[in-house]
Amino acid sequence: MADHFSPLHPAEMTTAERVRDIFGRYHRHGSLLPAVKELARREWVAKRWVD
Image (cartoon, rainbow, N blue to C red):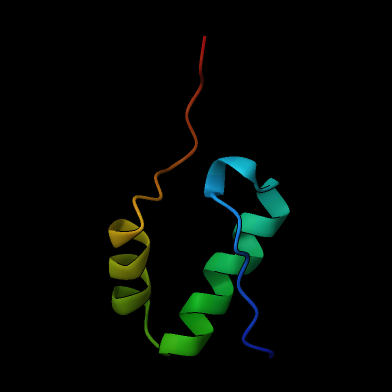
C-alpha cells in the first residue's frame, strides 16, 4: 500500500477520502493506538450532525 495521505483538512474531505487516510495511517503505524493518537493530535473527530 502506498503511503498517500490527503493534504486536505478533514472537513474538506469526502467520507471515502477520510476512511482511506485513516486506514493508511493505521497501515503505516502497524498499530491502532499510534494511528489514533496521530488523529487526535490532528483534532480529527467522529462524524456529527450539524443543524
